[in-house]
Image (tube, rainbow, N blue to C red; front, side, top):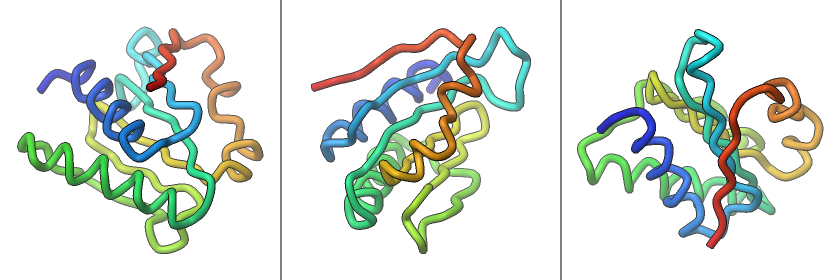
Length: 114
């Protein structure tokens, strides 16, 4: 699966669990460590966990396995690394604190909604 399709699929899987403010940032022009960030929020720790599970299980069903996972135990900011795509699932308050989209404000942004 290409990186852009993987990012779009991850965003759609997050939406299936009612993730909030789902965006995909295209980081390819910046020559960073990955091509895309998928960023979304959950309204509680349980919601963040459900979104993370949905993304991982949905992508594994298509043969794509995460290279690295961080933050799942606390569920305030879960990072799922697929090498070319990094999925960030935030608790809403944690997302407001880190403002990842502002840090990458020059990146092309695609918003997803159901």
